[in-house]
Length: 87
Image 1: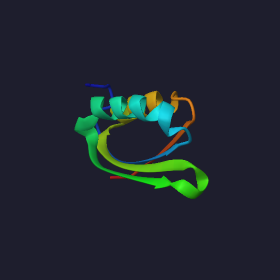
Image 2: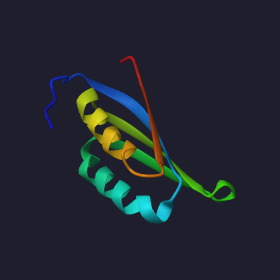
Image 3: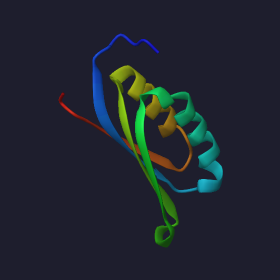
Image 4: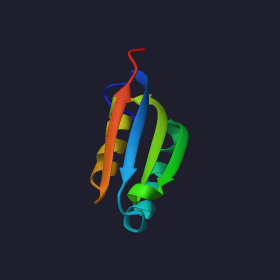
């Protein structure tokens, strides 16, 4: 994955999954495909709200991170937000 924007950035991606049965297989496949930019991953089932919350620490260029979050955002019942560092 060599995008036009090759400046690497550290970021945090927050993912909220409403329907685990539907989304987890597709989500895990995407995360596997982009595993080289994922530094760490934390997932917590929030049973009281019937959702799962995931945080990813990523290190990649904005094209790679944007491609991954774009695919995640297309999954039904999944919400994704990204925050980048300035360095």
